[in-house]
Length: 463
Ligand SMILES: [Zn+2]
Image 1 (cartoon, rainbow, N blue to C red):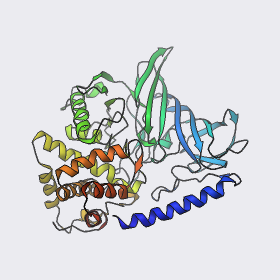
Image 2 (image 1 turned 45 degrees about the horizontal axis):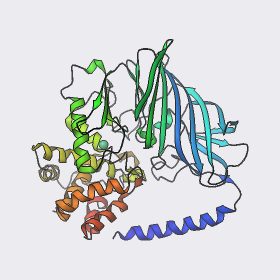
Image 3 (image 1 turned 45 degrees about the vertical axis):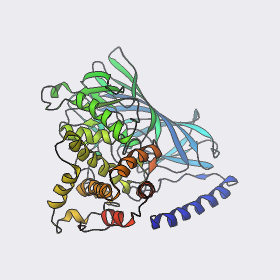
């Protein structure tokens, strides 16, 4: 057992119980302006649970202007006098709650909305926000020093938002712990292709515009949404295992690929479905855009987005995230190793599958190449801090943790644990304590020491 967790969950359960008693008869109060993430205190919002987003977007790459109308269907989790949404920088022109104009104020990245009447706890309501402006990407140290978010390209826009840039292009409860289904409708200049999550519902030309409607029916974290627009060569089909596939490649890159994106995506989707459990979404695929300024790729739900840099190992990493990160999402950003450690470990498993290197040897290569004095060993993988949440140790030491676990509990338990994890938390959220508890349950071993050493203790562990 993980000792810290029973104490923590006991306290939470007590707090929740008293809250329920009070709120049943309490006067409406404002929803919290954040969801309680220590890395991003203002992200997400309290007092409601977003269930569905309808995004209507019109983007003109010529002027860079985005005009949007977002309708969120949500369920109140308290009696609400007002509530917040997250929106960075863009102008809001009108807000409605259940079709009636509502008052709103702006403060930093928050929109505070006051409906005409209070929203009763348990009620489902709709909030519509009309907004517009020129979206700007975010920068700073978080994503390898790269810009991220709404990124203008030569022929449109590349949209990849982890961890906090979804709210630069649509009003939302911008935190992975509040997942929802999506309809995404995009109006773009005629001749451009708009690519988004889930499955294509319709696309047609009218006048000077192309209208495209995508639908993601499975719960999705805000940062995994995209509305990438540009010139694309699209290839669709079905993987040998039976999953629909949609691959969009910028024609500028068509001849420069040294990897068959469509073929590897199909093969890895099917292979991971055997190792990790059934593919969680309705479609797999890829968006490969000419965006050299984005120094990263992102596991956009159902269609990972790749900037100009790509290879087979990157593709299998992003597809492994469809299970680890997209279907099973972090409860708090400090748990990010549950995404990156697992997706990195998937790269090791892929090399093992290909017969090029065993996961044990991948472990040793990473372990031996870094002396104990290397700063790499000082990152606390289980709580890496906001600005270093994507430090290489989160990936590499996270993956090492899984190899150490595998060698401790044996292949049989380990390869039972991975699909058990994706099944238990499918479409939901989970944290490190949940993983430790499941690993202990499936293996019948006490594993506190292993995870304490590898995830929470700075320094190079001895073998
Ligand atoms: Zn990753």
